[in-house]
Length: 132
Image 1 (cartoon, rainbow, N blue to C red):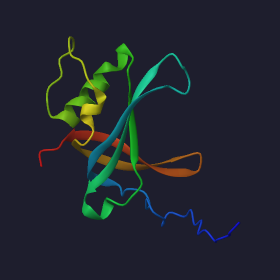
Image 2 (image 1 turned 135 degrees about the horizontal axis):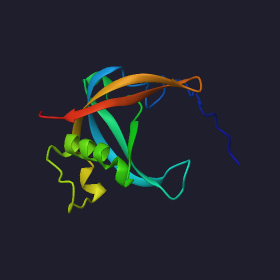
Image 3 (image 1 turned 90 degrees about the horizontal axis):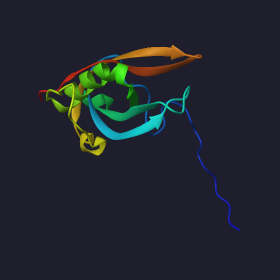
Image 4 (image 1 turned 120 degrees about the vertical axis):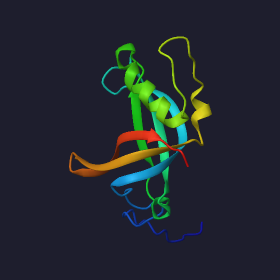
């Protein structure tokens, strides 16, 4: 059996980079999934994975995850998110969505840094339509 050395530097300067800087960025939606919430497996969230594509110096940073509840009483927040990502108005009733159709779309976002359990994370504070 042959042996070899692996460079296992897991610091913030490795592939994937550090956090996206605070401020206004443009995000590309890379993946959309539906997952149960951690606190109640009977409730679901739609989870978005995105990469900062503008400013250009942000595009090698860690992906950003944000989510919306799929519960009826939280649909207003999902509606706002979908309108920002798709650039179209969403009616209150009678619309359907294939989440995969959101992959590749661009959205403008305000990013803030938040410390949770001693770890700093980049968090989406607000979303806006990207008109670029």
